[in-house]
Amino acid sequence: MVYKVYYQEDKKRNPKREDTHALYVEAATEVEARAQVEAHTEHNIEFIEAIEGSTLAYEQQNPAYKLTEFGE
Image (cartoon, rainbow, N blue to C red):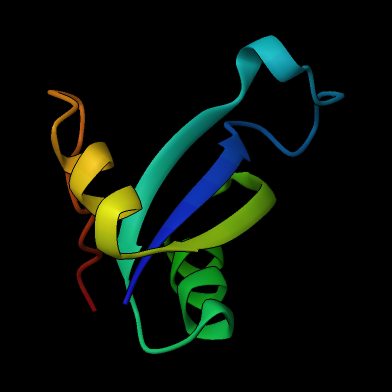
């Protein structure tokens, strides 16, 4: 399943909606997606949503769409 992870780049600053970014990860569960991002980044995760079907197809049309893969 593909998850869209909304995040702030830094945990030390107060979150601001206009500074929110998103990345896409493939994981078996939302918990696994969160663990991947937390283990490999310093991002402050705001929200994680599963995307599939027509929503995933829509997201994939965006030129900025790219699955993020973390090295083990």
